[in-house]
Amino acid sequence: VARRCFPAIQAKKGVIMVGNETTYDDGRGQRRNVTELLEGARKANVVLETRQLAMKIFEDYTVSWYWIIIGLVIAMAFSLIFIVLLRFLAGIMVWVMIVMVILVLGYGIFHCYMEYSKLKGEAGSDVSLTDLGFQTDLRVYLHLRQTWLAFMIILCVLELLIVLLLIFLRKRILIAIALIKEASRAVGHVMSSLLFPLFTFFLLCLCIAYWASTAVFLSTSNEAVYKVFNESSCPYSGHTCRPETFNTSNITKQCPDSQCLFAFYGGESSYHKYLIVLQFFNVFMFFWLANFTLALGQVTLAGAFASYYWAFKKPQDLPAFPLFSSFGRALRYHTGSLAFGSLVLAVVQVIRVTLEYLDHRLKAAENKLAKFLLSCLKCCFWCLEKFIKFLNRNAYIMV
Image: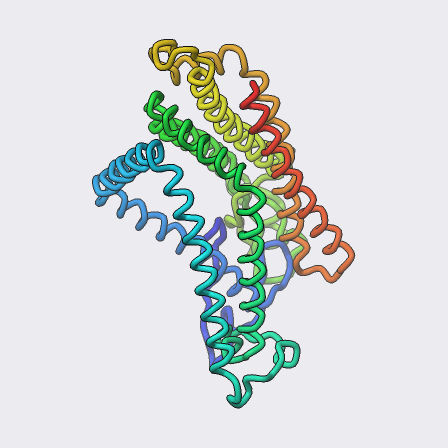
């Protein structure tokens, strides 16, 4: 399991043992406890269960693929109806949603006040949150008056903020309504934009397939490693051996009971030692390609709607196929810009993956300073990634 051969484990009077001992030889000349073997077997079992779950999901897809397609078609039809309604009823729909939000918050304030009043005089309801402390059962907090008071204050603040925003930003809301109407009209003239995300999704699937296949090929490029195993003491115990020449070597003469048995898949060459570097490079290429694919989709859509925006007479001045024309322009003139923006974002994402890997390795460490610095770096690079995505998106629109 997981490229390892497990010895036979048995329980004797409640004690887990390998043979008649509670320790075993790990094949590298070291004695380990059986509990470590069981822990490793449990982790390997998680991998096997994940594989079985993936197979069940794939089987479900093969059985119900037509229902998925029907659901996608229905969703696209509803989206088209919603876009058409936005063209004629955008103002009404926006104001109705705003009023609904205000009414829902108002009802939440009323409900919190009623719960706060109902708990008055009940035993244990006046306990403060600080005295109660942290509880795993969150329902305990619902029996405290202070909880409902806090909810009511938060909802009141949100209600007040929304009302103030409506008062001071009413003109901006009217502009937003006009933009929504114009956007729905633009989508009506570029109907192929509704199907283009499926093409982007297909390209992303190709990127994932390339990354996964490369990772599998790298993982399976290891060689079978054989070690010397013996029952008595032997100076060659745990050393690497070759089954083809083992019987004619000096090891069998000095250690007659020794055997050359398979230990694990790996290797001792420079290639095998730095295989993790190739895996990191593969992850980096995946991020680069995925970000390039998303950037290509954003530039294509932006170019298609730019054709609508700059058309003097609509729809007469629009190209016959604005989306395909924009896709061709993006590939012909803007590939370098897309690749550079994707490269910067991929570098930041690889750094984040490296920090996550280090965090996973340092979980058992007790150095609080290292954990604090790692957490700060993770937070900073997360913010940097969001900022670069924001800049890239606006830069792609300008391109």
